[in-house]
Amino acid sequence: MSNLILSRIWDASKLPINWFNRQVQNYQLDQILEEKIKEIIANVTKNGDSALIELTKRYDKVLLSEKDLLVSAKEIKEAYNHVDKNQISALLTIKDKIETFETQLFDKNKITTSIDNIQITNFLSPIESVGCYIPGGQASYPSTLLMTVIPAKVAGVPRIIVCTPPSKDGSLNPLVLVAADICGVDEIYKVGGAQAIAALAYGTFTINPVNKIVGPGNKYITMAKIFVSKDVAIDMPAGPSEVLIVADETANPKFIALDMLSQAEHGPDSTAGLITTSEKIRNEVQNWLSKKIEKINRSKVVLESLRNYGFIITCKSIDEAVTLANVYAPEHLEVMTKNSLELAKKFKTAGLILVGPFSPVALSDYGSGTNHVLPTGGYGHVFSGLSSLDFARRISIVKGSKKGLLAIKNQIKVMTEAEDLPNHYNAIEARFDNA
Image 1 (cartoon, rainbow, N blue to C red):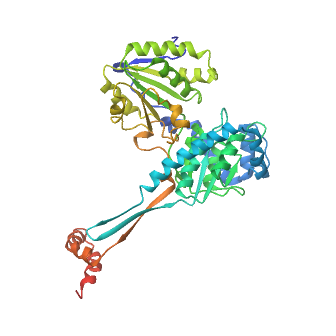
Image 2 (spheres, rainbow, N blue to C red):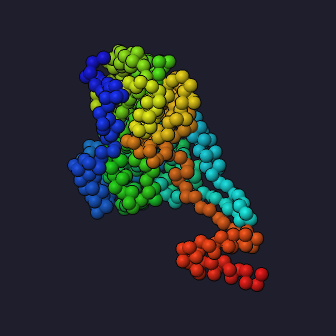
Image 3 (cartoon, rainbow, N blue to C red):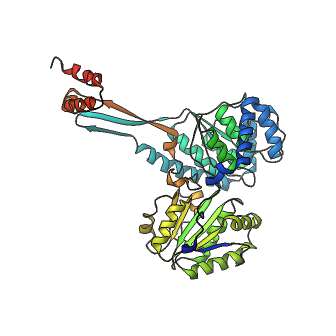
């Protein structure tokens, strides 16, 4: 395969020292981007709706009025005329799977236990309001709306709003609107980019601010979320999408190549990489990429992505491959090896792990019930994928008893003396003055 298609083909022992520093990690070093985002946020904070209208005209080439920002009930109703029954059925099926998984996850975190006659109850209280950012531009993502809104619904969030950029005619993708209606979104706004994040964080006359902002996006969205996070909670930095495939000689090279191509079509800044212990697999994957690249849809975007960020690394052993993958911390990790399920337990930093030849990223994007809003850019070292737990606060209720308090009275005395907080112990001792 020509190096013009995929130029990063390395032996693991000769890796560039910064091979894993993806774009998101270096946003903070991009001073031009940083200043632009600061300017947009300041503009929206100061000028509100008029800034949203001006910035939408500048960046999306769409002229809206203030009354156009909020999607009307009429627009939502009309959207149903532009989608078919199969699309609605697909949305409902995905919705059901996500709800099932998220409800089980949510409910298992409600516990009541007793430790030495002291009762502890942990319950989950929903965040009051959430803003879900749904990317647009080169493609629309009704599946991302499901992934962000449904976990919030499961958690019981009372106000859920959506911001997504309009198309050139000022409309929104009808399937996104139908998905929002099916999921019970409270408000939908035709606003995209960093200006949408600023509006969600600080509010305008039309858009009331929210307590938390979630959803993926490009580098502008990710940087804007990082900036506003000092004032409003965010889910995670979730920037340009990534897949890393770990494969040995048993893997199917055609599957690997197609999975890399599918990930690359998200956008020119997406990453698709392979780490393999087999030179044969490496060469065959290159051949399949070369065969397919000219024949697929969105080939221009895919080619740009592979040229900029695609790579193949050859390792001497599967242990070396695991080590590199754990350093990289990919958004999506596909494991195509012998004993893949057992090997998967060794990966500690991936946002999501997909095991075996029949678990492509497309499965988790559209059919498994797991969430595809995941940490990118190495943030998998400290963040998890989005879930219903991200839309609630954990609160513990403690109910002591005389017997339980008496049992630990001396222990508390020791600690209060060690920390020189005598009145803490006095509050304990007073309860036994007449004992």
